[in-house]
Length: 238
Image (tube, rainbow, N blue to C red; front, side):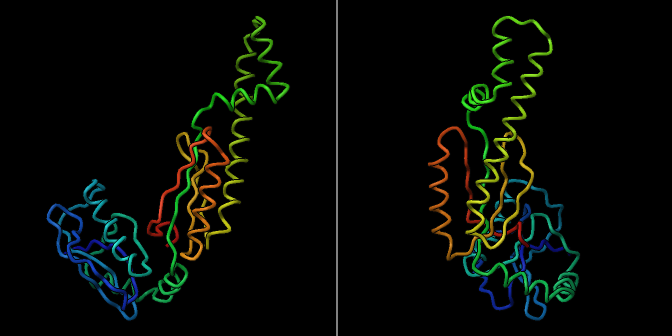
């Protein structure tokens, strides 16, 4: 029977998973496959596992329970192995790499930082006031200049300036937060976000990180929506 694999831990990691359901419409009991100094937390599955809310929540709950008792290597949702032998062979084939990863993640949790423009109007007004070329184009349009290229030129200029200012802010936020992390990963932002940052924060720096978070939120003010989430299993750093 196929196995759903949740995470990898050290062999002696506590596994207090009583009462936790695995994935699937009829979840099988959670169990472990051990190979040398490592083990994988798994459950048998006999169906295709899709990212439904119930199964995503079950996957996350297993990670959080394990994480509460020590370091884990959480696998992304949806990892399926053919059988116990395939799992044990995978553990044995890169045991040193998994052990190094467990050591690197020890005592750490992942935090996400995202930022978007809560209200663009003040920023657009700022650009029109501070950039002479933008101010000149805007004044010409307001004065009735019917040159059809003016709105496009103004729009492109303002958009470029907004993008540059957001990139500078994202760089500043990253620079302010990275010192509290053991590792970080900046991903391309999507939608209205201009910052998508993951940080691997050691437990001993958590309070400093939270203080920096509060200070940054206060300094930025209401014009920017700065969102923090965590502590989370360190998916991004496995």
